[in-house]
Structures are given as C-alpha cells and as structure tokens.
Image (cartoon, rainbow, N blue to C red):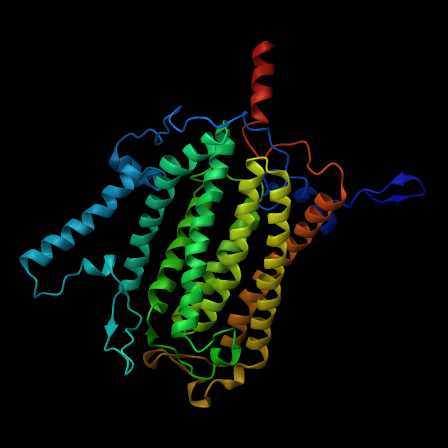
Amino acid sequence: MATSNGNAVRPQPGSFQEALSGRENDSKHHIAGSLAAQTPPTNGRGSPHLRQFHELPSKGFWNDVVTMRWMRRPSSSIKMLGAPVLFWFNWTLVAPHVDNPWRHLLFVSKRLPDSAQGVPMYAKSYWDIAFVAYYVIVFSFIRQSLTIYFLKPLARYYGIKKEGKLDRFAEQGYAIIYFVCSGSLGLWTMYNYLPTWYFRTQYFWIDYPYAHMPGTVKPYYLLQSAYWLQQFLLLVLRIEKPRSDFAELVAHHIVTLWLIGWSYLTNLTPIGNAIFLTMDWSDVFLALSKCFNYLQMEKTKTVAFAWFTGVWTYTRHYLNIVILYSVWTEWDLIPSQSKVWDPMNGLWMPKWVKYQIFIPILLLQFINLFWYFLIWRILLRAIFSSNLDDERSDDEDEDAEPRAKKSKKE
C-alpha cells in the first residue's frame, strides 16, 4: 500500500488498482491461487485405497438429464453416450447400404474427395452441431471419470485431504491433460495441414476462403468447440461451485466461443487454429504451478509460475498482438472477388466483417492484459517477498469449517 505524508493511501473504490489488489490476495482466483498458501499435506504418502471416491448422489437417470447432473455423473453420461453408439451399430447391421444418421454424432461429417496429395478433405455441415453436442457429453464423461477414479485418488495419495482442495487439484490435473493434448494436436494441424506455420499471418487471408478443411483441421476445430462449450455450461449453469473470478471467466468464455463460432462460420479456420494455440500452452503451465502449490512444492511452484509467465507473455500477448496486427493491416490480402457477402459460395468477407473479427480478439487481449498485470504482481511478490504466500487457503471449504465449528460451540 502506498503512503503519502505518513498516511496510508488506499486504492479508490472501483479502481483498476483496487481490482488488481483484490484479485492478487484472493486465494480462490484461478491465477492468484497458483501461489496462495496451502494447508500442508499429511506427512508421507498414503494409500490410494484409503478412501473410495464416489459420484454425486442421483434421483434417477432422467432427473440427471433434466437437471444437467449428468455433467458430473459419469454413470449417467455414459448412458447418454452409449445410446447413439448402439443405434449406429444396429443401423449398420440392418441397413449397411443406407446412410446412417447416427454416424454424424460419432464421426466428422461431410468428407470430400481426397486432395491430389491424398490428404482427407472436409467441408462444413449442419451435422457439425450434433457432433459438438455429442462431444460435450464425451468431455463431461472423460473429465468426471478422470476426476473420480484417477486424479482425486492421486491427490489423496500425496497427502491432500480437504474436499475443496481435492476438487481443485483434479480440475487442474484435467486441464494439464486436456491442454497438452489439444496444444499438441493444434501444432500438428498447423504444421502438417495449414499454410500458416509458424504464424505466417499473411496466409490467414491470401487463399481465402478456406471452405475445404484438410486433415485434422475440422475434427480439431469441432473438438475444441465442444470442450469450450462444456466448460462454459459448467460455469453459467453453476453446476460446480462458482469461484470468485466467475464474471471474468464467463466473459473470457463468451468471447472465446464467439471467436470459435464466427471463424468457423466464415471459413477462417487458419486464424482460429492460431488463436487456439496462443491460449492452450500457457494454461498448461498455469495448471502445473497450481498442482505444485497444492502439493506444497514451494520452489517448484514458483519456477513453474515463472515459466507460465514467460509462456503467457509470448503466446497471449506477443502472438495475439501479431494476429491483431494482421487483421488490421493484412486484411486487403483477401482476393478482391472474395470480399463479398455470399454465404452460398462460402464468402463472408465484406468490409465490416474485419471489425467483427478484430473486436473479439481485442476484447480477449484486454481480459488477458488485466490478468497479466495480476500475474506480474504475484510473481514479483513471490520472488522478492520473504512472506511468499498470503494466509488464506485455496480450499474454499476451509474458511467455512472454522465458522461452522465456532457456531456449534456457541
């Protein structure tokens, strides 16, 4: 806190400084929690079998479907996933020569003839909506299965006991698994199937429209869409307990889904792939630093957070600003005959669409800049302060437990 003439000067209410200060000391924030103080794990490793982890209680399958609890109950989501597989299999046996509508949920639609180089080619289809909806359920099943049967037992094995911290460890463990996979697939896709390797931004525009998607471009895009939609639904439906940075995350997810949907609709998948890559790899290091923090690996968590800061700086700011600059200055590389609004021919690029693309990327940059200032404040405090952590825990249940015990005594 700054001082003037010996008197403490507090940030003005509602100011940017006050917002940063509040987030910096908030142990429940998705970034600040990376270095927040933790209750030490129990000494020594325990047995992963000391406690069985179970699903949430259920009032029945149809109740789970209506209330969306299937997003947290693998036994319900697997039933929802299994029905289309069974229908697809039966249709294949009974009418193998008739188009099977159930395949559109399970597999990417609208396969085109391969390119001259033998690369699979795809186009957009209205069935893509069904594919994304189905894989929202797939990601829900994978996430909760990993949480209940692998990540929570792993956390307890390493001495984490409190339920809130077990949930957070599992959440970050899943983030590491997902973003390593999606980031790797994104790099593979850019390198093998797109002309934009490595961030050659002029090719966002030169060959527009990119109506035909080679190789893994379409499945990569649709799977990313399903993941972000699933995460958005978890947030806005409050299926999980909201965190203190709820509004920031909702804004971030809305802008992300806006970019995903608009870039796919307008045949700009190369720029969408580039933006995905700038987001995924920084989240890997953020999740790593949080997991190290939950395990009380003090030096390791600070090193991981420093790596995260470097990766975030490069991907979410430098590369994103490169993309913004390209949208603003290289737009005219689009062939003149393609700068029209002609959806029937895959052309969506009249002049005003330039701003429709620029604005959400800019909004995403503003959100990231707010978090970036917060990241540096946390990192500098960790490096130069003898009191590395604040006194609060990332476990949301810990604040409530003492109050509950106190009320019982009274």
